[in-house]
Amino acid sequence: MAKLMKRKELEQHLQDLDGFSKPKILLEQYETRAHIAACMLHTIESAYGDLRQKTVLDLGCGCSVLGIGSVLLGASYVLGVDIDEEALQISTSNIEQFELYDIDLVQCDIKNLPQILEGKFKFDTVVMNPPFGTKHNKGLDSLFVEIGLQCLSDKGVLYSLHKSSTRDYFHRKAPGWKVEARVLAQLRYDLPATYKFHSKSSVDIEVDFWKFEKK
Ligand SMILES: C[S@@+](CC[C@H](N)C(=O)[O-])C[C@H]1O[C@@H](n2cnc3c(N)ncnc32)[C@H](O)[C@@H]1O
Image (cartoon, rainbow, N blue to C red; front, side, top):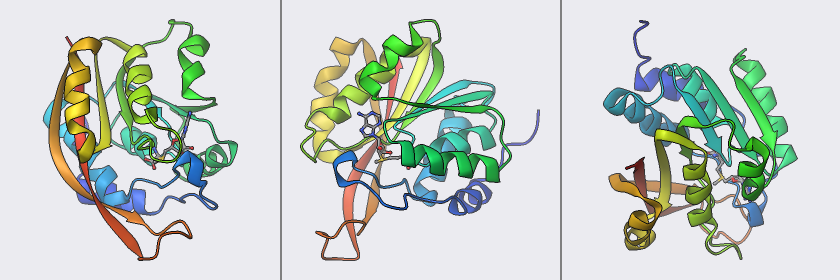
């Protein structure tokens, strides 16, 4: 089996990807920074073996930093899903830049994904950095997890990033979703000043890196 790519090398590759050209506030479009994406994905493979030779769903894929990183770490197949056509155009160009053939993209609202997949295709691993649900879309962060869990195979695992302020909420929800939920790490997430209303050049927020495992 080929050696696992080093985290620093992965980060350098992910830095080369194009991000959102005109980010849409209401869709909470900010890409996962390369160092955070590399740290997240490298942990998923090196500590848990959940990427290599696995089928991966990148929910709310944006410009596909997590999906492309998953393939670079050995995923056998990635499906990226996003509601926004422009984001998927950037994804397509990023995927072409890396000459990757194991990634497909679907444009849809995640609400409709289970219906589109018709329960016929289940994934080993879901990776995502969903909207935090703070832009007139309260609860969207939770819905992303619920939909992701529905798309997992029986022994599937979902990895996600959520604001640390919602930690208690997800711990309370986990038993009802029949998952074991664990915060693997707390990260300082430097949200870039993408939008006009941000007065500082970047805003640091505390974000939890979660693992949700089907029981
Ligand atoms: C925080 S961004 C993360 C993008 C990408 N996953 C990354 O890590 O760089 C959230 C993404 O979710 C997408 N999104 C927002 N609402 C959605 C919905 N209802 N269905 C599908 N995608 C959605 C946005 O277009 C955006 O690309």
